[in-house]
Image (cartoon, rainbow, N blue to C red):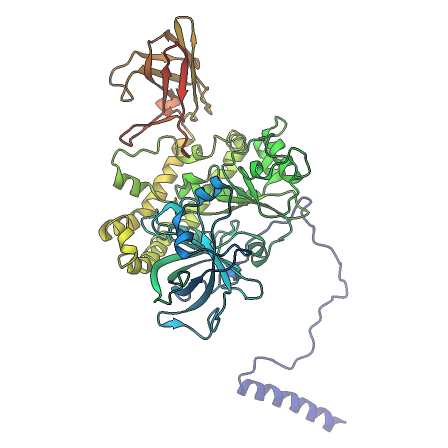
Length: 590
């Protein structure tokens, strides 16, 4: 018996020795005790309201390899039944607004999409060996479709697989972006912020062969694009989220009730086109949860902190606001984002979409030395909506938000991180932007391009200082349409909100938008001023609010001159031949 025991021990030692010699990491030891004798079986407590959602970090692994993907697109005419019986020239001929005005779907072509290298498709790439259409292609982007260089949407057909994990391939030219990488820069930075949701992006070199005219020509170089992951049900699945919840794309959405348009889908009043003028539904069509949120936002019962606590993921909301504010993105107040709420949860999350407007002040000043952002800085980018008014008028919300802004600046949007990422992308993009065909449409010279890239970190710091200033200044306000009463004119405006102290107003009335000479220049304590009724003609009213510390704020109104100059804080109005008064409000969409 002793001999057997000795042999058994020796065998174990020999096994350990051999395992070490062969590099094996497994040791033959006794099984570990997993359950203690006095195990308590206490349970982890769930949040009584929700469990916080986070993005799936593993989804972005390998995103930057290769630096530039090469795609080949062979387009041909299809059938009338499929809606693809159009030439490539027809697809590119009209902006998307034309289709909307005429109530028809954008023209499409049949296409073979293939992935490869600069010498052609690769055997390991998507679409290799395909001879018949595996996709359809059409224009994308309302603004981009009016540019000489177009952006495209490629829908891969059922049963034909996925490219980069996606059935919908969005290729964006970003022709209005002078550096052509700001959207990708924003998404890459978001990937490192735990409470934000990003999107997969790639640089793509696109070649197109047009066979719609019956000719078999050569592939044409279309230059560099950025492929951006579409936010839809596939996106939700890829990011580890519930794809059965509510998902809305904001389209001129100001968080108002809009009870004539935003109604339940089961209501006799429901009109899909009216609803989607504000929010384009991409998920569950039951709008009950959304409408409950809007009633809470526009009601008087809940404070800003109560709204955030009950209806939003606090970290996600504040991080989204802080990120775009520090990056100078003024294009997110009413659009360019998605609202998402998973099934079984009352919480809402914001996903960013189209970030090409970030860090644009240096370029604007390069184009126009008199450029001014006026009130579009700090918290004022958001406060025209009822949701953000409540949030930024709530002291608790402001304290919480300030902590997030500070952390965002110090940990995620640092100078070193921005410099490294911006220069990395600039090195890739410049190889294409200053070569044909993109060189024909470059917005700045190569030297100016480098200056814009170098100034990006400075813009973030300037935006942080502007945020601090916005906490001390009166809020922007609207100048209302003047009224005539007998032989007097009543100038009116909204009261400017201020955190502390009183507000006074400087009121000017002139026949010139320069206000070199004024019919009226007076100080007012109330939000109105009476003056003598002027005669028939064009007039300009300017009102500026002054708060504590002599901080000055302009009104929301702007006037655009015939030469293209923008005059901020100014309302243009007319005294008509019959003596009535009519204001002229600027509409950016006209």
